[in-house]
Length: 251
Length: 330
Image 1 (tube, chains in turn brown, cyan):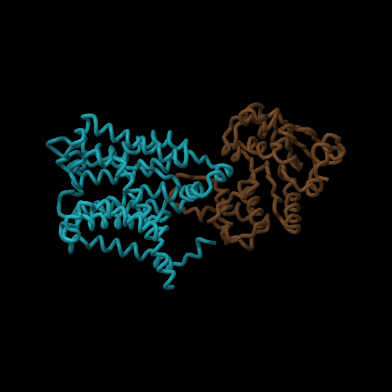
Image 2: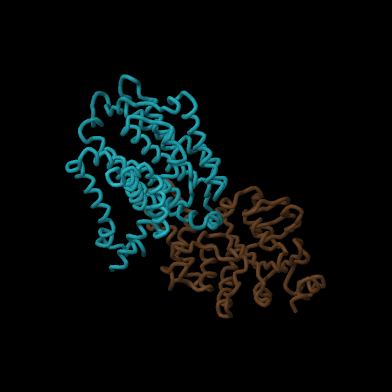
């Protein structure tokens, strides 16, 4: 693995809640052009790891490197502006805003000009363009003027990704983007992930094993906050510990 | 695009009630008696105060229960800066008043914005009560008796006097200009990127942080700005009465302005203005002895019950009622 392409690296990252080690010395690295899936049973610490990597929660130990810089103590907004985007398991959008405004607002973080009170936000070309291209990319152009409340569940999941993309991240941390999606919608989302792969380093948390083994280049398996296996899909599939701890339950 | 679909007639129609109100206020001194003109001044000042709180409550989603502190501090500053025997300069007193309110807000906001929800409410209340006790229990501002301001500030610049606040209806029009200015600045600002970011923070702060907005700084900016406008209202209040006392910093005052915003309907600037008007008129009505006789001394009871009734019947405030009527007809 060439170090030059590593965009995000976690070195023995831990997060404790009181006595519980939700994330226990996890190390992983995300590289541009690689889709890295993170799987594990419920409560394995996957979402907590995403929260720690994105800066929503501080680490209890370990180090996080973002684009070659030590970002362990950076706030979440700073990490986001440096190029780290995340999506949420439960859609957290701006429900009363239109699809376009959801994306435009996210894009605005890169062109803030908070002191310019004269120019209307609706005339901010940079953020409008970023929003348009994010909306195109996920295939929501037809509903760009609808408010979130008027969207289907699948469309909301797509918008969740679009809002994330509008901020032009290089690293994507996606928390169960396929949750609750129908077969067709899932297929479209997986296609989108394939399209995003060349330009991004992607960490995909997902429960849908078929999907994971279809699109992932690397898979890391977590159980009780610890990484028990990491490698190519074939290697992970053949790993005895993984079969016992995780796949054994499911199959 | 959303910007180009707002055609001029529709925009004009929406602005019509505002323009009508402005026109009405502009000609009012010519027809109204002194009592009603004074009442209009009081309402306009409270409307500026309510607008400043609307920026926090309705636009940014921050329920401050200590907004009277900024109103009161600015009022005290102009009273304290005015010598006993002559007027202070307007160009010193006004920036000093607003600056003092904003400076206190910077300190209060820096601390209180680290909390949220009910804790934010309690901390803003605590800081306002602290300011209240400083003026109530120390001799700086005349203690619980308050202090008088004998001269309205002088607007002279090197001998040239653009306006005399004591002449005719000059003060009335100065207050009206301040109200229109406050409304205008806030309306324009809310359409800007800063305003949209505040709206985003109100709706989903977590997402705003994930997108890269340093939301704490944005909220602190809004808090200080709101305090500055509250300070402008307090400054005008001191000039109106020529008297300030600690009651204008008390939690009653913070509660009253919050009620104005809620009564009018949060989320709209005009709701705050409507709320200030309705609240003051109800207060005047229930204090009217010709109507309520001896019961008028229990006006607070009647006001309270009326507001409970209003809020129960119109959860979106008076502005929500206006919208509903318009839609019902159209």
